[in-house]
Amino acid sequence: MAETENKYDIWWWVSKVIASCENIDHINAAERLIKNFWVMFNDSQLVRKLYTELDFKIQELIVKQHN
Image 1 (cartoon, rainbow, N blue to C red):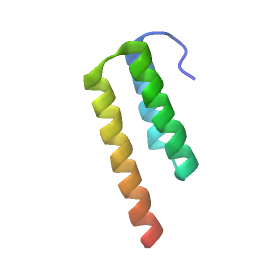
Image 2 (image 1 turned 90 degrees about the vertical axis):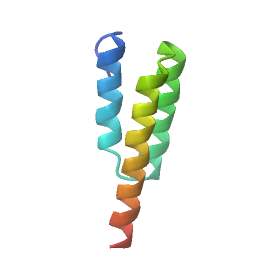
Image 3 (image 1 turned 180 degrees about the vertical axis):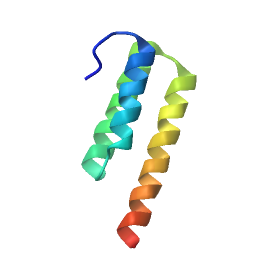
């Protein structure tokens, strides 16, 4: 868990969680974290970046599964 309430620290922590996702349960948890980040900070630019990272991670897992 992020150790501060600074939105950039929490954004960085959520980004690291996304990078560590290995299955659909992890992806779902990361998506809930992004939604909670939006509720807390209402920062569309950072939320968009997190969703982009999540989309990339999903694609990465799909490719990995098919190889």
